[in-house]
Image (tube, rainbow, N blue to C red; front, top):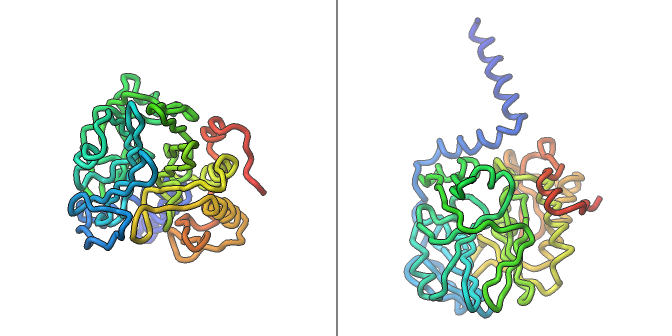
Amino acid sequence: MPAKWWLVALSLVALALWAGSERRVLLMVYFEWQSDGTPPPLKAAPDEGAQSSWFDDYFTVELLAPGIYAIGEPRYHQENYNYLVTGTERAVLFDAGPGVRDIKPVIDSLTRLPVTFIPSHFHYDHIGADLAFERIAVVNLPYLRERAPDNHLTLTSREHLGGAEGFAAPTWHVSEWLDVGAAIDLGGRSLEVLYTPGHTDDSISLWDAENAVLLSGDYLYPGYLYGFLPNSSMGDYLLSAERLLTLLPQNVAIYGAHRLKPPGAPRLSRDDVQALGDGLLGMRDGSIEGQGGYPQTFLLNQRLQMLAEPRWLQDWEPSTLETQLLGSLEPRG
């Protein structure tokens, strides 16, 4: 076959892959190929103001409400935030950062209660790398249970995405499966498990109704929201926003897993959930245009920007799983 026909054939294969669902996986492979397989150097320590205190030269601690602590990693390039919530009988750690440093000494300094680690989702920068947690609780999704008949769950590369920084996908022994909508009883405090896919199909948030605090993981935080990753879904993002708008009161305090700038933990409000929902509708309908190549940036408000595929590649159909778990709620428009 002449060389030019090989080029045509390769171009057609590349186009088919790009038009198919695996284009996002190829993008992650490209990012990994471009990296050196290690985390970037730590950033200089910023001024965290009076509300946060430095635990050491890496972690910060901030008391958000009685029994709710934000544990920041402001020197890591993604500026992760993890949350320790304590009751009278037990505690939960919601996310554990990338594992560049061991978060356990911070936890031990804040509580002597038994602690269960709960990941907001399975990306490498939230699960603490190879830290060995005695108790791990994972959202009870059918496809995850099928992969863990003996309660040993191995994360896939497309769930984990840690290769670019040299993190291997772990295998966990799951000690507790969290049903969507279930209440986690900590003793004197209850947290509801909310299924909030969009960023990923395994994303959850924790809702403390009594204190009007939502821990939203990577579903919502100030800055650039990622909606173009291998298991992201724009349709799920929109349906989750609609669900949250029916649930959250006006006085809710929302704490996400990353921040845009210092000082302190990343806090948003119900108005930002409204802006997210309205912005996603604008993206779907074409009234909000993206900027750049791939991914494109869509401005939702002054605190939120969505990184997503160009409009002609976006899929706004909610997943079957989300429709089943969240019921018959239909997005606006």
